Image 1 (cartoon, rainbow, N blue to C red):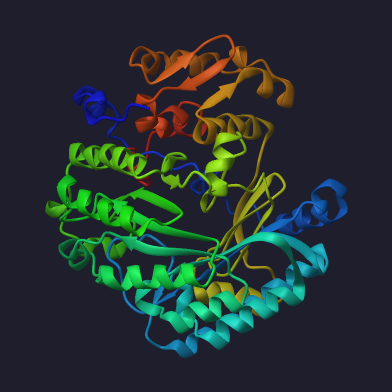
Image 2 (cartoon, helix red, strand yellow; image 1 turned 30 degrees about the vertical axis):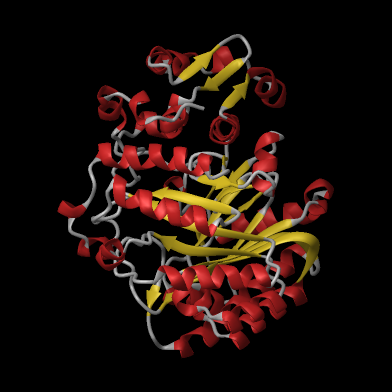
Length: 464
């Protein structure tokens, strides 16, 4: 794949310098409605329990721990900034109530093959609290052998002894929040963590046998330049995590109050961001990483890279995944879940979340039951995002449609992308080109009927 920066013209940059979804789901979470209630969610859970096929498939569980000790200015996550660690224990009790309400509908002992603790900073919890959380989950669910059990790590809150605890509790995958090793950038976003600290923790994690280590990077942060990010990429190459998640910073201060502390004048230009992305692709591939998709890289022997080669890649609310269309239970404030053909989201504030549980109700406050059209379009969009191609025959057989007729308008709208060399459309399907990977979100957006009727996209990050 030729990913040199000169493959992207100034004209393409101007055309695609627009906001767009990341498509960790379709329809996207901004389309969830309050008309979807906790009753609708419990019905979906009950249908899973009564359905033999669904019940036989393992679950995925996401647990949101919202607490952080300090504020990172770029952060768009749902979080609570506090140094009062005594807030964690009551929260764990509410999580236990939420799990109890779930097991009433799906039964005890459901198998799970994937667990992810995110936030916030899950490592805000101390060792005993983490142990209490995992013990509670193990009492209610059956952890499948060979599953993926991961936790997000704030290197500033973890030491070697904590890594021992995580290994003992059964975590086998760690995700380190790096973002950038440049000290000037770290100061600009209020997240200073010495490179030596991260290297020491990753080395210690490897020594303790963790199966996979991920590092998160963000490009487009204040005071970054293509040259400064080159240095971070070189350091990441030396660190050699199994996976790398490379995200574009979305500056949306009107939505996320902490971002108002960032000086917009210090943000790199769109052209500089494209250069960072282009050079990242080149540098990481030169370091031996497989370009899995829009924002994920992995070493060739990592399960994510293997899934990419075998056409088994999927995408969920945590990004790219090897889990095939797995039902997902989201636990905790603001968590999003997927059961069958429904999406759901918990209350976003701690007060409302706790109040609903105090009333004996699941804290779901909005969601969506997918229509047949949603399901067809989701299949197309996820095929583009994961495999970079859509095979007409598979969509036609699965959904009893004729793609060329069903998406006639979309193919007309996509002709400009064909002319620009971003996609190829032939008798068999749609194929994203090497140049098109820069704009794969834009390709997917053509099939998003919600965007076609609502051009107000300021709520999304920009494609570039």
